[in-house]
Structures are given as C-alpha cells and as structure tokens.
Image (cartoon, rainbow, N blue to C red; front, side, top):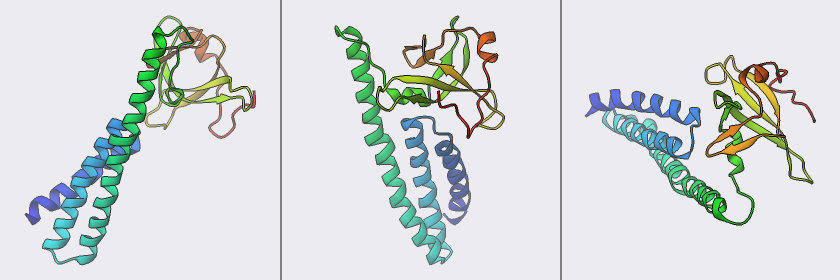
Length: 188
C-alpha cells in the first residue's frame, strides 16, 4: 500500500494542479478536484503508513477542502452554467432578444467574419450605467498565457453564435488591431 500511495500521491496532485490551474470550465475544474481528492487520500495513507502524523492530518484537511471543491465546481457551478444555457436556449424561441451568458466573454472562442478561429475572449469591458459592452479583449497565440498577444476588439458588430463570439473582421484586420498591454487597457 505504501508503495502505491508513494507513486499515486504526487502524480495525482500534479495532474490535478494542472487541470485546476488551466481553468477550462466547471466540469473540468471539478474533475481536477476529484483527482486532488485521490491525491490527498494517497498522501494521507502515506502519512499513516510511514508514521508521519502531520502529513496525515494535513491531507485529511485537504481531502475535506477538495470535497468542497467538487461540490463547488461539479455541483453548484455546473448547475449555474446549466441554468444560463437553458435561459439562452429558451430565449432563442421567445419573442424577445436572444440571451447569452456573459461569462462566455471571459472564456469563449473568437472567430473572424469568415468563421476562422482567431483567439479566445479573456474579458469584456462594459459601461457602469448603460450596461452596454464597449469592447472585448481577445488573446491570441502563446501557451497558457505565456507569449500571448492581447487585442481590443470594439463590440459594435460582434455577435454570439452558440459558444463563440464572431467579430466583424477577417484575420488580417484583427491582427492589425493595436495590441493591449496586460495591465493597461483603454478607458474607451
């Protein structure tokens, strides 16, 4: 048992940390917490079998925190996302404007006017009193945020199509937009 735990604990913890840090949505993050739970149980077993009470108790507490993470991401957050998706689907056949979950603007794929993927939406800026979206910040390139380029896309003409944001320009026009510094976004 000790040998299995000594391999399973660090592998599970590393995989779970990568999954949770990637922030790929509630279901994937919830899966990360399931794997974290497996890792914390393995660490607790290792602490028990090697007579290390501090390792044991630390991972008993971490197991409880990981169970909270599972509830938070596979329970609560997944239901909230399902509620938003249901409202969006229902609004498509309603005699009112079609709705979309605003959280899409912090994670959605961005496509050009001709349907080519050009990046990912990382944030949107909206007016405090009007509630109108002013612009979208789109990330392109890089790996896990390293080496990415941020660009400001005016919201006018943008449209939501399923889980994607269509911008009113082709790839070339998008790449000619001025880059945005990570910590200095325009006020307008």
